Length: 99
Image (cartoon, rainbow, N blue to C red; front, side, top):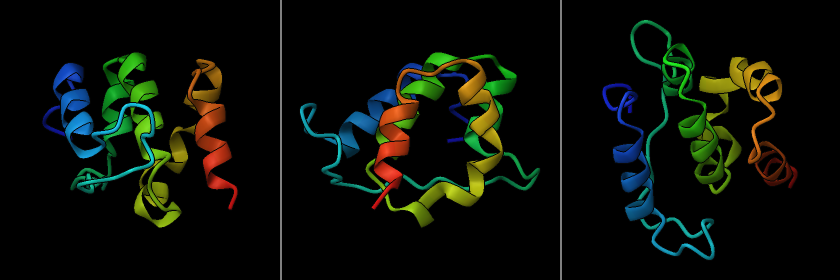
């Protein structure tokens, strides 16, 4: 994920393979790992540095399908960025966190 952070189209293609049903992204066929690297950066941190907000927004859509422990520790510091850029998928993502 970190290596591909500058290739949003490739990341999206990977997520589409892992979530094959476009009508229901909550169906996960393969789990995409979401961790911090050795520099303590999540893929969201790298995307923010590159100002690739479109890919960040796309990832929010797919990450909504995973449990809260899957990625929450790796991206909690990115929420001010999501809010500041009014990402369209943020509401849907936050709704998925309410269980």
